[in-house]
Length: 387
Length: 139
Image (spheres, one colour):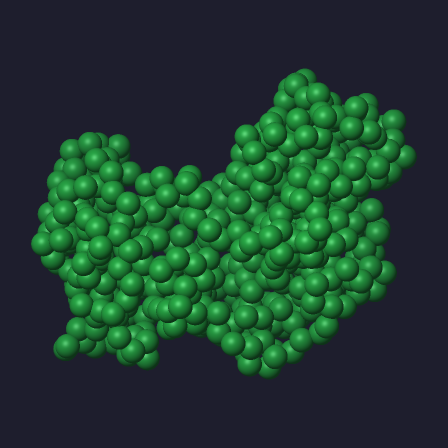
């Protein structure tokens, strides 16, 4: 597998803060941008493309581009929730290959922990055609995932203990991350004894709510070759929504059913080639459905797979979320896609926590699930490779 | 009538007839003329074939629980202080899943429980269609 000549991620940065009461959201975007550009060995003046989703305050990505002082000739404000930044990287690669730009900055920031819940209904949501048929009944984000979890349990026999195992593995990884919001190992019993948030999901089945920020820089091959940092090539990508389909949607699967095969095919890889996987983990059920949909185990077998240590790094069959993931480390702005890419970059650079580094990790995936798997989602898969 | 909050739905020209019917305790189910399939949520075009020949027939109001979640405590808006709200998908006998609430003790429900519709007037146009366990329910 080789991505030689293709655009690559050349800079990556995760803001160390998990609570940022003294910073504005714009400042967080800027600090993450500066961190990623510095990591790459580039400056703001090198950037000619910019991407940010709905977490960027203002008029699409334009307000932040102006705030940052960027001169860009291409931008993308597409918002698919937590998967948006992966979609941005996929689109940035296409834009670079189409000759539209050469250095693309992608930023994320948010303050749901100290700056308001971020759960307020916005005008855009009120105008959504489904809004009146859902919101008057009081569903929360967690309750949509709770409905998905209960249906998965009904159809496949998945148990609360199996879901809890996802959190347990994430916590075992998070203890190696000094920045992790929840750095302590938890047990299955801890998860099951935590209060219900949206039954059958407990508090510890949920991701953390953190302030924070992150950024990546994607560059054309000639720029890549001029830099010192090891590039992470974008070998393949896939983006696909899954909706309620007129009242016949499947709560037990996601868009990964389509985004995964497309990304794998473009990269020319098989499951056996994947050394490390960043898997979106807004809730424990999200991980179980996703690894099934991506084909790492048969549909309905995700529960036993995770309970048997399938996600453990570095020696499990599918080492996942070695930063602790959204479940334990960081889920800035209620959007976990950026941090999924950042840990995949660390693994491919050999810069993950030493105890969790996958030896000789050459191919990794980053996968994100925006929206709500109990309603409508947009899944995005990136296949990334060490150059 | 349940004791749950009854926020008024936001209506528009495409959905106002649907909501007006709910104030007469009628749940209308949009069905495509050409392809004959019922669909949810209500809209003026068929999501399967794109036809705007949509008929609005009263639904049976009966179905089974497809899935549900019990929210320990509400987060925002009128449900902020509500404990034990049951949010559910009910699969109507006509074959579509609709988002709703289950009314009553959460312990009486499981996937597959037979339910029937009831209506709660809102403080605006439109009543909220919610579901209770059928008296003769199995499951």
